Length: 119
Image (cartoon, rainbow, N blue to C red; front, side, top):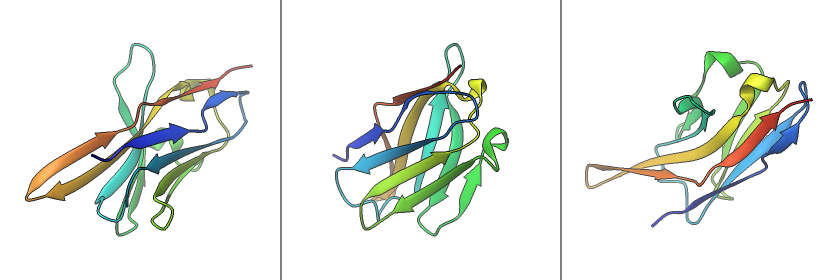
């Protein structure tokens, strides 16, 4: 059973930066896609950024140009560099990883880390 553990959340002022990290308990090489999602109070969970094993990246329109996702297969970690943070970025951020085994999809989630953008 793969475990994902997020870190790096916290309180930051508008315009500030944070870097989130997601550490996997095992190798991430077999994950076909990894991503960051977020969920604000009263809202549905939404995709923030995703990266495939081949390096294809996509971002939500709301974070393009401000956030950067990266994965380090050697260290089994996923990162999200967040710059120019806005109050509307406040949410719980979740790490997600997807792999396929025997034609079955396996979806893994971390426990989440709180990001609060406020002055």
